[in-house]
Image 1 (spheres, helix red, strand yellow):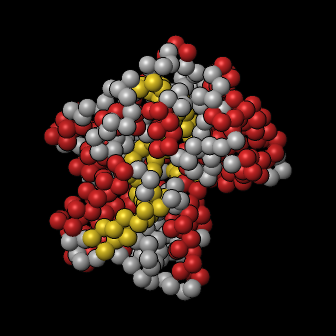
Image 2: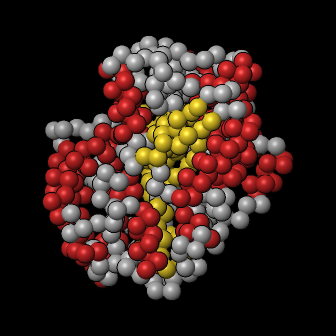
Image 3: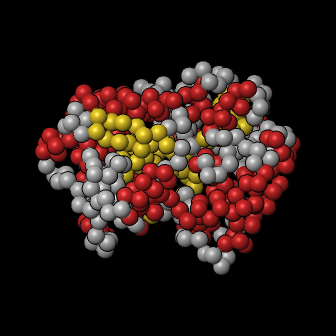
Length: 409
């Protein structure tokens, strides 16, 4: 383990030296001094606020940070991560290189790439220097070291895994009729008009559906690992929009309007308006059942050929006011205790980024004892991971989607 970490660190240092100069952070090597400096700080954690159970989990994180370290964590609830990025951009333009309003961001791939390119992030290497990094399973989860094909280079810290999984109510839909690919999903929608839909982009879940379909229908999938080629973009995405042109007329409300987000889709499944929905968390169905939001007949399925998967991260802006508190919070988020609670469907149900082999016996036993719920697929049932396309694809297909369909909303 030490050898592998050393090899990674050496490779990282070599890569980091080629990066433009960015803001230096606190001295992580003196963790005791960092904890002392963080005491009394307020960390403004900009994070998506659209889920009650996630918000409740972050409240628990805040309570733990306060009791352990005297750090106050305030969740700034976002509809779109881009709004937090816009704050940092505006502050940099105004010359506010210290005392920024954003301390920690739950960041997605496209915004990470944007912030990295604009040198808006804390110095490279802070994430891999955190004390709890020693538990992270970066050897077997490659999306921890690359985010939407962009090397993370220690500029962001992982705190959960994600994979697209579909849900259905077994009381209404027979398992034998379920689709096993995007093409079969279209056939299913045609045979069951009005029973499937997806949130309109730029909602993250809706955009993820577009990327899933694109990954399956594009003529050359290797193109998705590279930036968009404007010369061939229209030809590359033609199969995606041909697919959507067929799906919308047989979708919910004939594709003239769309669910607002995942919670809206979940409610529509519970109410019987939709028969198949999807999320980016394999435990979402079990969590919904446990919370009384979904009937206990709901079950999960995925495509045998693979579905999108990624890791989600937290990042620290270069001008964060509470850098020490943000580092302390990021470290706590990858502690065995915080990751255990996060994977428990009673609280969130989010897959861990930790390696069981790196944990002590007590922590391994606690993870093994978790009841992941009746609707949660086991790791061997989740199927292959389809890597996220380069971040530029999301921006371009969202813009093209709006151009073609937004007037119908």
